[in-house]
Image (cartoon, rainbow, N blue to C red; front, side):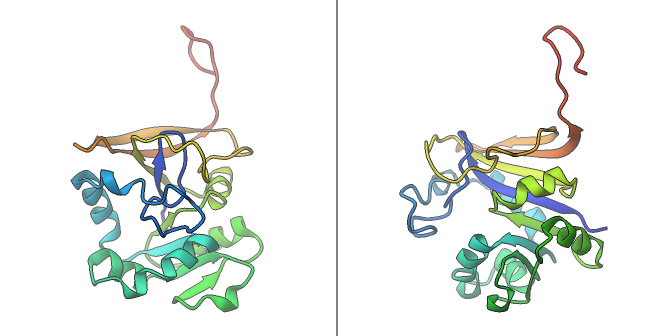
Length: 203
């Protein structure tokens, strides 16, 4: 069974939209908010996880943004891995996936991801989808969640965890902080939400 890791650049107030540059998402006024916090800590984490064979799980919007960038990006371990990866895309228009190899997930997203995880191949990485993430967590399909947290408040934009995200518990397994203030938190899903009262054990 292939492992699936969710990676997200995220602000302190939960925004994930257009972290990489001013032109990443043309209608968003704060594009590039993560770039000032580029840090060796982030490079280490991404280098360890993205430097070898992998396949990608992407929402259609992220796929379209990346398809305009990565095919012409300078050669690097990450660019080479992304361009070689099979891109599994949540889309109603699988025939228009020009940056390949690529295929659509189908209408049953959870079923499609479950099928892909059972296929032989490298581990899977998801970037940049507030639509896919809740589905993966709800159906127990994510093995790890890595949040790259920039110390900024954006106020508005697409959020990773939106209204309707299923209640779940995440277990922190690793955290690193860079000199820039960026924090990289790695979680594993840890079952249903547990509640309790301060001073008593959680149920």
